[in-house]
Image (cartoon, rainbow, N blue to C red; front, side):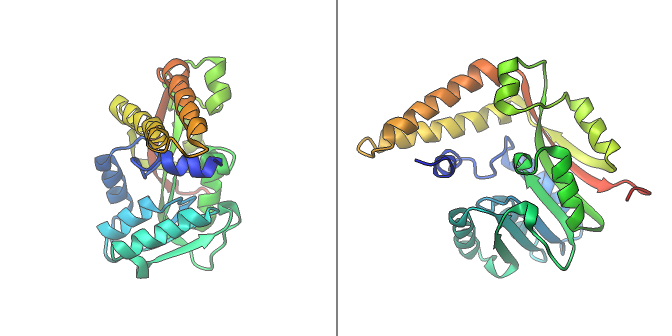
Length: 247
């Protein structure tokens, strides 16, 4: 089974693909969609869950999503039809870094996709290219709550602590107007959901040739979470605007 399919199974119970509960997602979207008629872009939208919730929350919003996965985009289109918001959603199958639009967007979303751009600041640079004056970026990325082990850094990336992460964003020309640090419950619920969904799929499909591989992956990933990075990893979501006087 390829990585994309395995990720799809893992996130069945947690479609926002980030350690955020429904209340946190709703609150972040409310802080971004302040007028209710915004043009919204999700860079790396996957199955489109953030966009679907934004469209359901604000009937005047129009949204576009960019992702390289044909299957994820098909799922997003189907879900949009089922929720009655398909006519307000445009989907693009391409690398998010290559996406271009003739019109800017009022709100840019990017959660759990910073790796595709090479990190948090490159993701913000990509978002800035599409952002309308006065617009907002809603972005989520990891940070280290405690000094990580070398194994954790190799596994998840070279994050910094929360204060340094925010300082770097501010130095890059952004002003946080809201934010959320995922709670221990949100972090744990996300990991249990991911690796539990994988394990459950393997147990429910014992005759599938990929079953043993999927179960082993679930076991390895759960062990890595519990023994390598659980006590060090954190996740911060930021609502950002451009700082006046910065290009």
